Length: 262
Image (cartoon, rainbow, N blue to C red; front, side, top):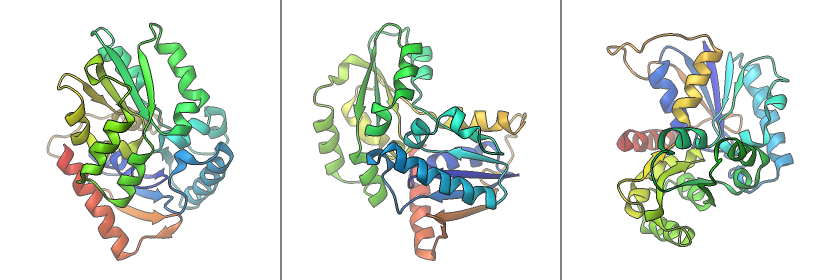
């Protein structure tokens, strides 16, 4: 079984990380579109062009399914668009529904952070119309976090300053959940904890996306507690080109960062 996973950059490694834990026997192709990152500040037409190119690349690699590990790309790649292709294509969206269902009974609001394209897109607003019946969800764009992640800046006070500035109109004590609506945002959980009270829950869509992938592939199994995580063979590409040794070392530092966050 071969699964393609792609993102505008290295954010989707957090989705690959989840996939390796759940289906370690699979082979994976991870494609980071480093030539065009960040997607969150591009037009919908540009992003669809990138997606078409990546999907063709994945199909040439004979994948059995493709995961769009990018909320921004999913926001412009509608379900009808994805149905044009001969393999299942699983997108991901900000886990607003999960946050409302799990934490909606608690007092306080829910803050959803994403890229400008996702925030402005019809897909997210249609989702809010369905699940946010009491108007308790706020939206904020945090594109700077994508740049920090792509530079590998995980330990700088500039991140705290950036977040405090961008969230200055949102009182942290008013929230019960913070939804990470971009896979790049997963690298900065320690910084959110500096700003929000301990009672605020961090929510992302990675686990739900991989569960949907498993359903589409017909994988029904209980995780073997003795099964080694991450056995699957992985091929890495940056915008269609195999990664160099130096680029692979860079990827390994990102994966180490994800391990630290667990």
